[in-house]
Length: 118
Image (tube, rainbow, N blue to C red; front, side, top):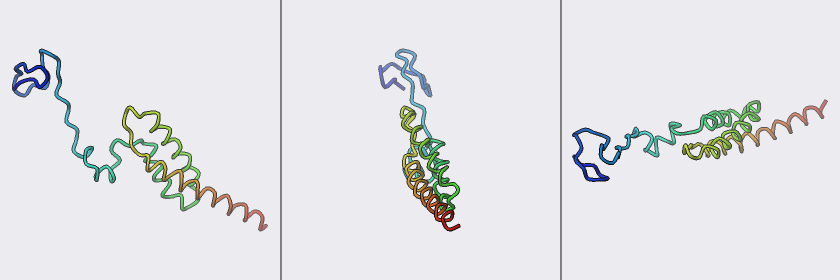
């Protein structure tokens, strides 16, 4: 076995070249590299985006809608702030902000009409 960087002989099974310091990259799980699994499982996704996505789903109940909007904005900020960690979840954050904003406005309009009806 030879080092792919400097060509010096390495011991069998070694992951570090003693000559140049080359280190064999650690293998990541296949789940992280499979795009179809990344759609299902939140691998490498911002925790804020996961929470925001679920709150966005429950926004239909009106009460969680403002929280979905808030957590969507927090997720978006977290993703932009930590780009070096390659966080995903932009779709979940956008979904939470759009649906959360829509149902927050719908709830506010319903509240205004309920107050005016009295």
